[in-house]
Amino acid sequence: MPRFMFDPNRVNYSIHKKGKEYNLLVLQRAQSIFSTLLDLLPSNWISGVQGPSYTLELKAVAVELAKIEIALEDVNRDISFETTRSEFLQSIVGYLVFVNGKIPPMEYDDVEFRRFLLTLIRIYFQGSIPEALKDAVDLFLTEESDFIENFLLVRQGASGYDISDQFGFQATVDTGGVFPENAFALQAALGTIMDVIRPAHTLYRIRYLFTDDYIPNGDDINRILDESRWRLACYYYEDFRTYCAGIKDRDRLGRKTNQAVVGEDHSQDF
Image (cartoon, rainbow, N blue to C red; front, side, top):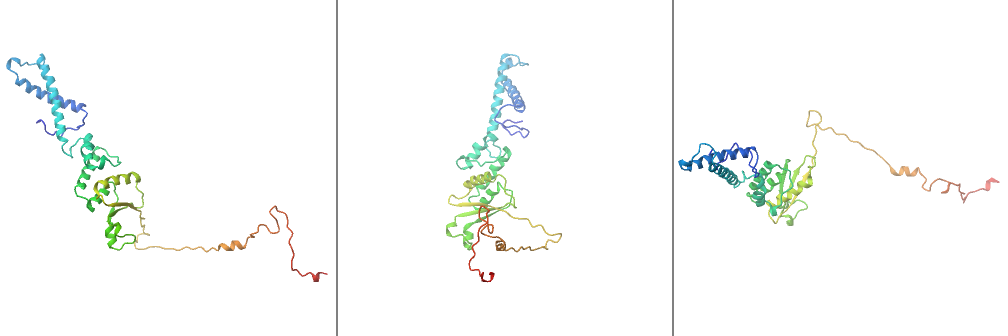
């Protein structure tokens, strides 16, 4: 195939120049270059076999030129965001996108990380608009999210908001009643992305909305069975049944106490 052209059948584009595929590619390129070098020699230098010293030297030169060609082809592919090798994704793409070189905590392989960066670049060049901010939140979420700007709530007279909240916004995520896994790592990742996309003078809040699923009664989804239950209790009734002074006619040691008799009429006893 022509040199310095993309080979669609090639699998490994790693910066580590080794492996069966790479060695075979070097051998094929070196043989082609070696044949070209032999054709440049005068007729009295041409040998039918690779035995003389000059053929061995030309073979060594061809191998090194083949390696240089392959390296130049790989470097040429690095100029595109879509074909940059995995080892350079962060240094070439991520460094240009993220603030202060910060990367959100994530568990992506090379393909997923490349797709994430390309999506982030697309969002970034939309500008700091509500649609871009919502797309940034949706990068890490599979649930439905709703993006609301606070100044719209202020205009509607929403309780708890005033003119001081006009430069804020909030993203509400419907979790369906299930708390997201790794919520703290997710919050940190969203914060890093928001620092890239949002306007510098704005504040934001990400909320998780928990909802319950409605399970209908039977086949009729419009029929709701309701029942009430009540329990009547009177706490002071139990107080009336107890003697607050302890055990009647007994002191704290359990001995019988003398009861003073006052105001009793004993005139009829004699």
